Image 1 (spheres, rainbow, N blue to C red):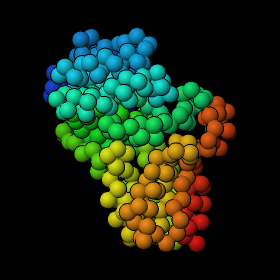
Image 2 (cartoon, rainbow, N blue to C red):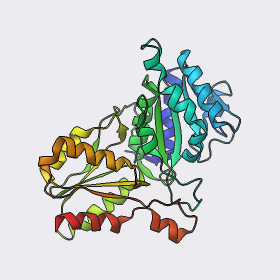
Image 3 (tube, rainbow, N blue to C red):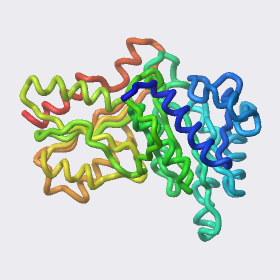
Length: 324
């Protein structure tokens, strides 16, 4: 099978959906002529023109508000917020409007929009451009939350998100845009709310998503040298969350480590851990471990940035604490 970049898989997903449905369009800062800050909309403007690939003013609230308006009148917008750090400027539109409309209008309207953004550390671009704020989104009823870790998942999940009638926040990791992976040329969809077992194992379950999935996979490979078999699960969709797949794995391994690049306090990992405690406490033979970013603004210094976010050794240490 051919291999393409993560960012090109995203472009392909949008191109195919725009060809399939004329109601799909793209909007955001520098998404048209420039092709997106990370090249994830490159070529769409040349193919579809300014009516369907629109540059906007630097106003995140206006971008999300316009997307909501378009969605409730029958369009299927893909709005891009350049960095998730800037989503704070649009939280009223997102949390109080997009997430609530279907409920507030008794189901008489839907908000079929996708809010694409990117997050995470790794490029030393400091505290305003490096955060992982997915826990904020996961907290809000009415929003779907998707975080793909591979080019294959990026394409299939984005196509599913565009076709969904709920507002979907689709978070890409800036360090994954240059990652290559196998992606079918044919049309395919990955259903939202279905986790993927990236590696089978029997001694411990590691749940990780987005860039940290790859950190967890590296740790799992290292752990094999110590005869520890880790099963690595990528939820892919944090909301709805496929807790059944996680519980099934914990039933087999009896141990759970959750890896996230978000700040530790109030982390997605905390919610997953609590769900496992509620529905599978008797399955556990050891306390659940969380491996998360430390509770500090993400530093610009390369050394300090590396120290602030989870790494392979952090995951290995957490696994060994509960396996030995």
